[in-house]
Image (cartoon, rainbow, N blue to C red):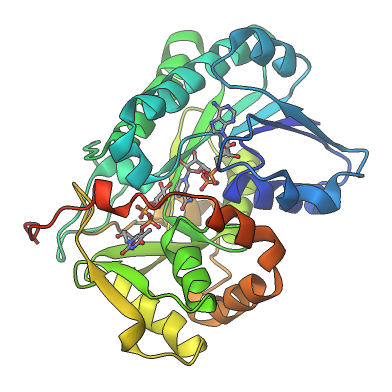
Length: 336
Ligand code: NAD
Ligand code: DAU
């Protein structure tokens, strides 16, 4: 099988390619990625010599190149996106361009190339935020995105479904929780906090750390996508559940692993439109046979160790970047 992975140089895409080459050694994997600030070919340097792996640099909004790349492809797994909520607050149009127009461009090319499956990777954030006592999201929860990032991902999900309903393109969609694992860009909560502490800097915790996210190991995510490709029903959406934790719980876990105390926390303002809580009911995927194999309490020490051992991967990324915190944070207390 020839599988096209878009955004394969990003966090989840690179982990997915590692997973796929290991578990499906007879398949050819084509990684199509534009290498934005979030794309790191270094994450795949160990598979560069694999004859079943090929990298093609290009933009998913460029129909000419997308059409060429799509030719002869059996399955598309679409990760490429602008993925960081804080950046979407500063530059929403870039998110609309990549996430909406880019997805539409891929869908058009996939239709022309008659691919056998177009799998779209999306997020729980499309459902908006939950209060403390609200029931978790299900596949039937109405869309209610609240940030430019989640609104652009919602737009992409709608387009994927529309290509199924209108043209019969064989699609599946997964919407998942916050991932954690190796090769996670240090702009996101867990790797940012680990690398800050490794460099002796404080960690900027928004509010009082009361916001809640669900955490999913990137390997469990890869297995879930694999299962949906094998057993998922065409045209359907599957949610991929993680484990609920407050940001303070995550921060305390990291501090304990590194034997540091609460004085390393710097309390900062919430991001604009900061969603309070996400939570997922994963029963539909579990009915296909998916089981979450990792839990964050056992895995976080391994992730901390990975960042200790792989400074070569993250140090230069981190040092070259402007701090965007002030532009995205509000100074007043949010409603929760
Ligand atoms: P990431 O930001 O780490 O990687 C995105 C990749 O897409 C990068 O390699 C980048 O170079 C590439 N890319 C961006 N614009 C492109 C373009 N125009 N053309 C081609 N390539 C382009 O993202 P991630 O965290 O790995 O997330 C992957 C997908 O999973 C995204 O669609 C995201 O919305 C979704 N998702 C992520 C999480 C999470 O916790 N990280 C959770 C749920 C869903
Ligand atoms: O829920 C899935 C989503 O998870 C994905 O769709 C996104 O692509 C991914 O980036 C992630 O979004 P979040 O906004 O939840 O992730 P982030 O790591 O940016 O923030 C997690 C929480 O931590 C959030 O409540 C904000 C808070 N935070 C984040 C950073 C970067 C801080 O308190 N301080 C920080 O410096």
